[in-house]
Image (cartoon, rainbow, N blue to C red):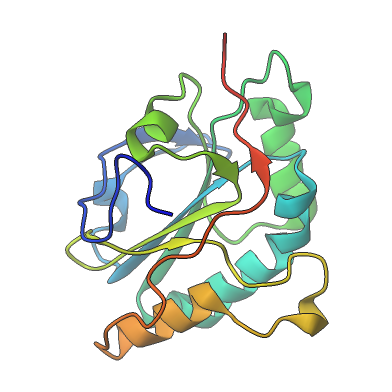
Length: 180
């Protein structure tokens, strides 16, 4: 379940990426946050689309408790034009994203994370060590049928200083579309 690169306890790779708001984001941008959720995402994947409202809810619910969510699109937009930066801007506006949506144009960050899917979730603590990796919950198609809210549980346990009961799940979704 672990990536080859990031195991539980691994330090977050540094980054400097442009967001759909034309601002540049780095780890320093989120230095005041106790928890950071990094989601490898995109526009065209039906799994991502199914989770967008849940991601916004997580940001809304836990944002005041020291959490920041960021979504990163690393997909090759020459093969998948829906995932272009301009289309990312449109998607973020249409869906009223309440979190930064960043472009990893050269795919360096996806490689540094050894990310493979969209959506793929990485939760980091205040020290920016990985405490959870995997999926958001156990039912991407039907929110009403969700039995295990893996990401929410990991966030809640982190906020309370508890050990993460399920630190890893397998990621589901579309594969990241690599260049070349």
